Length: 187
Ligand SMILES: Cc1cc2nc3c(=O)[nH]c(=O)nc-3n(C[C@H](O)[C@H](O)[C@H](O)COP(=O)(O)O)c2cc1C
Image (cartoon, rainbow, N blue to C red; front, side):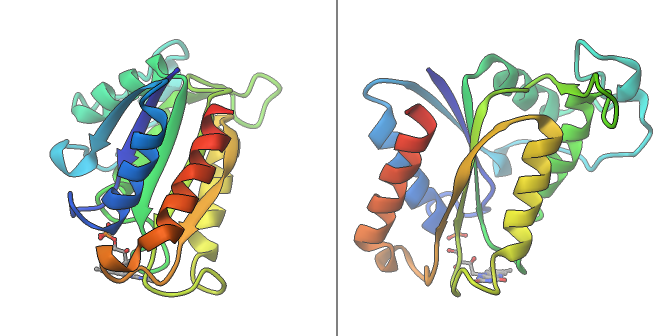
């Protein structure tokens, strides 16, 4: 299985990166893993031109930036993990443009032909945050649910590590969460 992980944190050695590494170490004995540090890619915001809707078999986005490189890797993969720290109850502004640009992968929304170029792939959400889950992570989970349905992904759950202030605060709970995520994605 080839797994793409997308790190949405601007901090390459931050909390989310630490938990994501635990997941990657867990699965890479048996599976191929490639991480995309979104901070190292240039992804512009969606222009809303709808040109992508003229093409079904390819992304068809008019912006020839790194989003297309990332989408090609995702299309070639067997599973995708979206990892982000919680920023103001949502995804970071580094990963949000990529999320919006997923629009170009979808065709026929609202019709019986609704499909996407990454349809059927197992996908999961990994989040670290400083506060609790309840009353804090509702928006990001709602976005991921809506987004998974729209992309026709096979959603494998939301894996959230609360009270995550420094990498030292991660501890055994991080390893446990990463292990559960590994089981859900590869099982
Ligand atoms: C700009 C900013 C906004 C944040 N917003 C929230 C928030 O809404 N809720 C929360 O629990 N933590 C929030 N946090 C804390 C981070 O989500 C948390 O510390 C996370 O583990 C940082 O991950 P990182 O080290 O991968 O960047 C915020 C942090 C920053 C810098």
